[in-house]
Structures are given as C-alpha cells and as structure tokens.
Image (cartoon, rainbow, N blue to C red; front, side):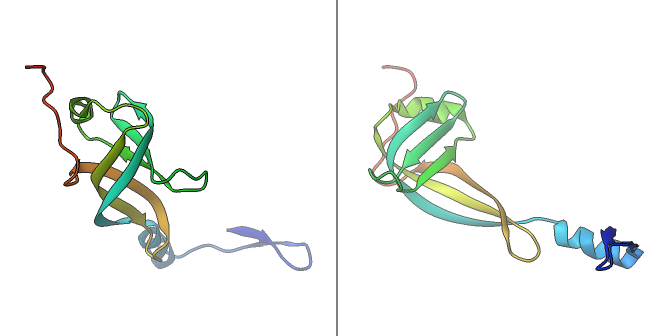
Length: 123
C-alpha cells in the first residue's frame, strides 16, 4: 500500500501473509435468505424472465426487480403491464463479513395465495 504522509512524502507498507489472509476473509461474501410476499402492479416486463413490480402508485413507492429462474413460469402466468400480482419471493442479500449488504436479489418462488397460474397451452 502506498499513501502520502502529512509532510507530502510517499509512505509504503506491505501486508504480511496473515494480513492478506485477513483481508481475503473480509471480502468473502455470505448470503442471507428470507421469504417475503410482494404485492403490486407490473411496470416492466421482459421475456427473459424479469419483472418489475411497483408496490404503490406514488412516484417514491418501492419497486422490486423479480427474476424468474424458469422464464416459462412467467409466460404461463400471461402477465400484462399494469396487472396486479402477488408473488412469493426469496430475498437474498449478499453480505460482506462486516455485515454490509453488497447485493440484493429477488427470485420468484411461486404465486401468493391470491395468484392462480394458467396452463401454458390453451385447452
């Protein structure tokens, strides 16, 4: 590591093997999973299996990017923009060793009690 000292001179230091190991352990992420229900309306929709659900009508109401592991599940629902949905999702936070959230992800687990899927092929 190199930095400037208070007098303007360059200072240097090296981490020992133990210090490098400590820094590596700090950077290792761990996941915290939680199952939640998201209810709102669809504001964005992608064929690749990604939906944005906005929970209210106000500009500042929260919106969630929900990913479908199988895009066919999304197609089977036949959603449209503006449709009201109720999803059970896995909320996964990637935490560093200090406990700071580095990433968040919402993955669709299934419909909540209010949502009934349709068959993919018309009968």
